[in-house]
Image (cartoon, rainbow over all chains, first blue to last red; front, side, top):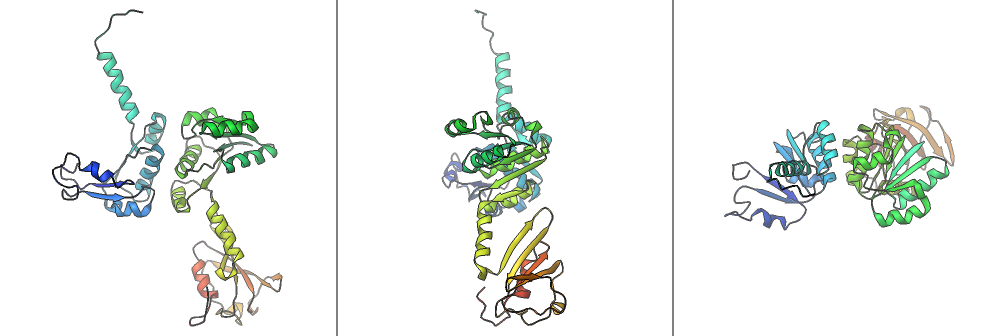
Length: 129
Length: 226
């Protein structure tokens, strides 16, 4: 999204993640206009430092469902970010929070659909059983 | 009452034990297998193993018919979301959530998870009560009802000692309800003159503490220690 000319700000509790951001880039993350803040999404100070108040979109994609659901709701309710997306692995909760008006992405659901499609489209084997 | 307790740590286990003694029906949910096996030796069928963040675990515990859900795990996000789901999805009448990190309390409020209990805050309240120099003591805090009762000790340098109650400019949304003098309490009237060492009780709208501190605290230029 940075390459498309958007302004992108990353918040991560691990300072090392900054290195990962620059993999495959020919310039530094900041040189390309990116921002990086070390902190956790539950810390108000960290969210503010990352610029949540001026954000047009907010993506909660940590490796914890609970963290994502809480932070996404904070972004939505407290900071009124227009577009908020949360990654939720648990399909049941992803569905319920979607019904509550949260934009959720469930990688588990997506993977299941892709696997199903792959199985259906795959070369049929001779039935041996 | 049917009560579901989330988390079988020290708080959850002892809470379940007390509630069972009071003849409530209790199910504890514990996500750590080892902890579950330990506690199961005592609580037997009153504890189940599973991650209460997952809806099917809550349903297996019978959340649809629960009167109350109490979330006391060591993880604030878990406590918040379990209570949110309990109230909004399963329409459980009453919830209580434990706050581990007091800085997270605004998040609990934001998600409508009330009441929430923080051990740190409770101890701080006791501390304020035990250390009178601290100034203002919270006696009662009803967040939902927007009501607070506080107590203040009038020191030598308080700007209201020697003054009539009727002459005090009490901040809007506050009322002086009682004066404790030499171990006895009485309801003051406009002619009551406040003395050094009086403990005054006031009822107020939340957020007016600082106004009261200004009014009853040390006069400017005094050697106030507060």
